[in-house]
Image 1 (cartoon, rainbow, N blue to C red):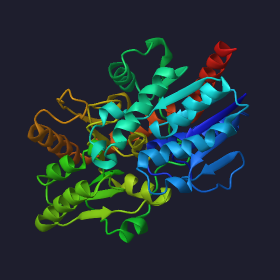
Image 2 (tube, helix red, strand yellow):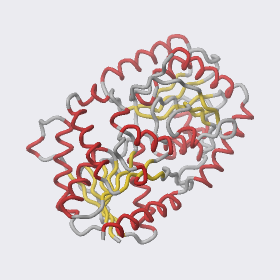
Image 3 (spheres, helix red, strand yellow):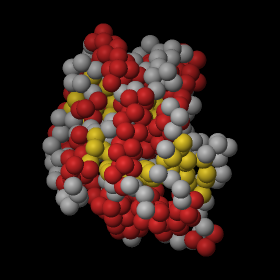
Length: 398
């Protein structure tokens, strides 16, 4: 069986969970002998079976969404001869959808996020958000199968696209490679970034985007004990406006307390693992999170996890076992915005304070998280489930 996987992100150009998912899925499928051809955005790759596609020169000055469609169209002819095409995120959905129509083979979509659930992207894309929303809707409705990375995401898909047949929406979780992500004890790494090994710490890892909830976290940690360090591995802002907001909140924190560490560059895995391993608790304050690979990464490194009780997070973080969940009541407009932002900030601060106050219990959460990541989220299991779905849709199309 030949499968063409289409993705915007692929090594070495990865900035989010969808790219991690695509790379690990490809590796695991190839490990069991599947013929996988990767179609990725960007410059040529030095990897057999993988091709990079750049923005056509004629679209150099076009809206970013139109540039995306140009890249997608340049991939379509090359997908002739495949048995299944599998696209990841709206950036790649158009390529998969058009190639499916042209070549008469099934298209599988993995939903890592949903455009209707991220209306703030209009800040980033302008009119391109209407284009991305149209592409996603069209691709989902035309797909042979849609993979949701959590049951929470499946519910969001069916709510966002009510004409979809529920039987073609399948839950297959994201995974984690626990050999690559594991506890790393290295005080030299901590010293390099100004993190004190003998002080409790709260660690955040994520892009600076509305859905990740970083401004709520920065307001919550202002009330934590003065000896607690705040370590932010945060970059790649969606817009200048949210970057300015975050920078202002960080400046406010630094004016009242020390131990506020902000690392804006993307770190090598070993360094990030060392920071996660050192954490008293990792925190995921997302207001929209289909699953959250970053939570699995933290768990695999032995960190307790405090996460918002939204989306797929409760399917990863077992409250009172691998960490704690923070309650949230959200506006029903797709944004995930808390109905009462101050109440959410207060609850986030309270739960963090409770975890930080009992380091022995936090360590127990971390050990349980490592065990859960190892036993329930292996890429071998996920690749087997995905390949079985490929075989099912390919057989149905014959």
